[in-house]
Length: 568
Image 1 (cartoon, rainbow, N blue to C red):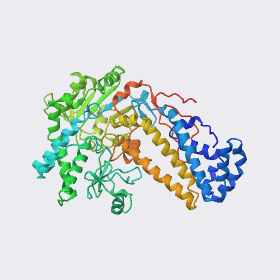
Image 2 (cartoon, rainbow, N blue to C red):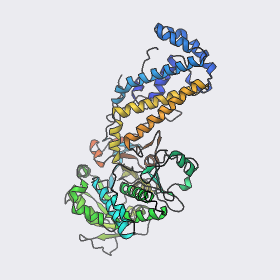
Image 3 (cartoon, one colour):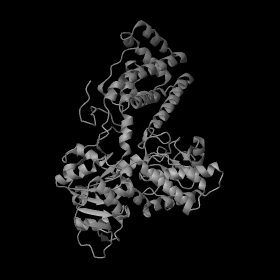
Image 4 (cartoon, rainbow, N blue to C red):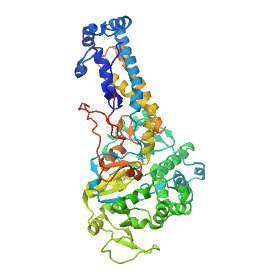
């Protein structure tokens, strides 16, 4: 076949299938893509015969003979041509891989959903857990073990559950749990279940069974989790958005697995509530807090440079505050470890046990001052003073006492609902989501294996989209073979991230429900606050203008890591 030129846009995986496939097909005179939906086999043959003379000048005798054969109206000729285009597309895709790999993404980048300038930000607010303090994976093992033992000791669950250990790579954040059916699953931004990611216990549920249970794969709005991801007021699904929820999902799955293995009849709703109560007690009763404080080097990761970020903000004259649901002793011990004993001097306001998300929308709870020894004082709070510690309260009182309002405030948190949703929707603060999983996912996406697989999936999708108009049996057999290859490739791509549930951000081609909420409630997002060290405080973050489905991608590709234009 003819040798085809490749434009600069072929270097980006976003544009690969559209521009490369158009290049292959148009060069061979196979299709006018603007009218492809109206082409019949007869149209195709007529158009292709009209392109012979152009092709004759670009191909050698052997290739030209194969093109002449394909131009016939016989099903064998068309089938042969389909595979010729397939092979040419695959070769061009493989040749483009080195160029695409050069466009790797820096894992320490701050990504923007909404344009935002740090030059406009005067006040910086922070959550504590998984925002300033990052924990080792051993903390999840600790939470799992304590909650499992509480189920046995306080909820009369079987002793055999002690045989289950925490599985670190079983679940991912953002999954939904059907409380009544005891199913853990991944749902996309359009409320569709991703088949192959529905688990009962520790084992996948067959696709046909899922379709039968839900009468398809769409989950109606009234069955989805509520605004904060909870299963309440008739909502049957619970969404797990908290990083601390990973042990809870795993424990639910392990207990379900135990009951099924031993043919024990049980009520799924009771199981969910009991596991939820056990996990809550790990926090509320202070069991986890005491364990972390007793062995802080084991559980807190020091390497996220939170101290350097806070120091840089302080030197630049920024106001800072801390609002966390964790208790004072726990926060104090952790901040002493991360920042040093002078950590309170960095913050203008410190609020503990805030009871988010209620803190952001419940006006009834007043602030209480807490002494060094944890004693709660009864005096009325007329001013939030630096160096003091406050408990509970509410955002409306916080705004009245500080006058820190609107888009000059930027608040960072890891929980998209509890930390960010109300702030952006009700109060107009700018919001930054901390997504620790992002760093590992980007590293995976930068690998040649992932680039190769996704580039070919995109190109193959373009082939299927274009060639599906040929309805003769021979052509359809070829297209269906491509569809099966695409399905297999997409399953392999999912497993690169997580064998059970895939990426946190995608359900195959669609964004996950988690991604949808992230893009709505966070102006910017990043793996950790340490990413702020890569930018000055006048930097403006711009969301990349990715084309809508009806828009043509006519702008050049820019590397998100360093802002340089791609070169040929």
